[in-house]
Image (cartoon, rainbow, N blue to C red):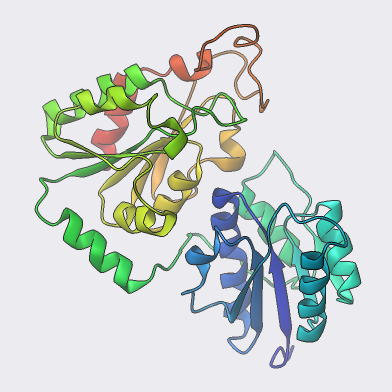
Length: 327
C-alpha cells in the first residue's frame, strides 16, 4: 500500500507513563513508510519529551483541562481542521476529545479501548492495527532527549562514584494509592545499596512530596533532586544513571525508554498492564488483594497512613536480589 501522502494524528494528553507507552505505536507506523506524516496532540507538560523526536513531524499542545466550546477548544479544532488529517488514533478517548476530533472533520477516527489483560504498549499497538493490519509491534521503547540537556546532566554527574542508582520515591500524595514505597523502607534500601556497591544514590520525586521525603537524606552518599528539576532535566539525569528503582510511575517508564535498567515495585497497579516493558524487572507484592487497581486502598480508609499494606509488604532484600541481577 502507498502511504506517501498519508497524514496521521495521535492523541494522548497524559499521564507521562502512558505517553511513553504510545511511542512504540508511532515508531511502528513510521517503519511502514518514512513518508507518513505523524503529528501528536498532547499537553504542554509532555511536549519536551516529544519535540526532538525524529519520528514525529509536529507536536501540538492543548490544556488537558480545556472546557467544551471554550476559545481554546475552538482554536485547536480550527488548527486540526486546517491540517486535514487522513487518520487519527485517539489514545485518550474521553468525551471531550472525541467531540473535538469529530468537529475537526477527521473522517477516519480510531479510539483506544483500555484492557487490563495486556500491557499498555500492546493495547496502544492494537489500536493502530485497526487501520494498519500489517503493523509490527515494537519490542522496545525509546524517547529522544535534547542534546543540550544530556550534556548538562553528564556535567552534573561526571565526578560521582558509580553505580548511579535512582530512587524515585515520589507520588505519596497522588490520587492513586498503592504505588509508593514507604520512605523508611527507601532509607533502609538505600543504605543497603551503599554498603554493597558504594556508588551514588540519586533521589527523585515530586515537589509536593519534598517534606515527606526529607528522611531520604539519611542515605549515605545521596544527592537530593526531589522537586529541584524540570521534567526534561530530570529525564536527562535519569538517562545517565545505571539503574532506576520506583513504584509504577512516569519516571519508571521514562527510564525504561532511555535504556536504563529498571526495577518496578507493584502493589495496587496491575503489573501485567503497566509493568516495566523492557530493560528491567518487576517485583509484585504478595499481598492477597494485589492487584486491586483501586484509586483508594480499603486498608487506609479512615486512617492517616500514607502507604498501602501491599507496598509495605515488599521486602528490601528482594529488591537487593533484583539489583544484583541487573548490575
